[in-house]
Image (cartoon, rainbow, N blue to C red; front, side, top):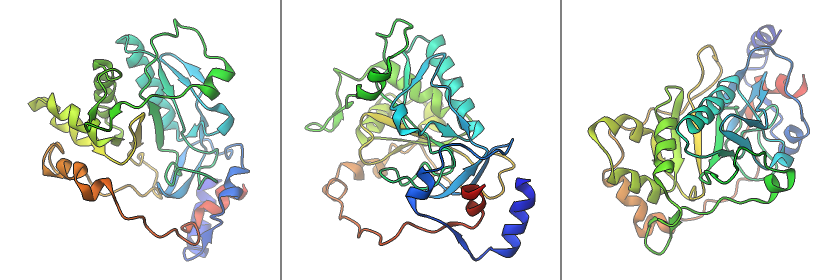
Length: 280
């Protein structure tokens, strides 16, 4: 049914836009009934049909902040998280604590996260808890625990009281996944990874991108899955491992005191196809 509606909407409403009111999307607390996940639009202006809910606990991971109801994503994202949890368990790296994925039908959220709209983004805490002893966190712990910062802001380095080899290994495992497009981390974390780079690390290091904040979690973004014709990915990453002068810029005064952009008067328009996703 989704394919038929896609064609109809694309032919009849290619110049129309879907409702971009965040409250409208937050009120849709269940996914559409489509049997196959489809990401539509861009990461900051899109939606997802046929999303799946991440089981709140699994091998090597547990989901946090369940009250947000942002445990939904494309089937490819759910599979990725479960596979990364298995890696964490097999290598005894600690339990992954999973933050936000997206809403049941994607779209803009009432607060925070301009991205996470197409079911292809997930935040994973740097708190790799080895103290769980295979027990499930309580509902209260999932709501009240916080991830510590991995960065010493006074020295622009990672905080070695928090940072461990396990963090580097889980980032490498995530970046080596072929479905991953890029991973956002704090610039100081990227700098730390560059200190230990080897010739064979160039390809996975290239996917690790410095970005503001991201000192207590890393943000994984998947590529548009095959067959998702209306998913729009980002431009290709620059050539190289990213450990060059482009990284040095992040520690400049310009980067540390960026000018504040003017607040948009309205959310960006969503693709017309998202209207059916919202109202199905």
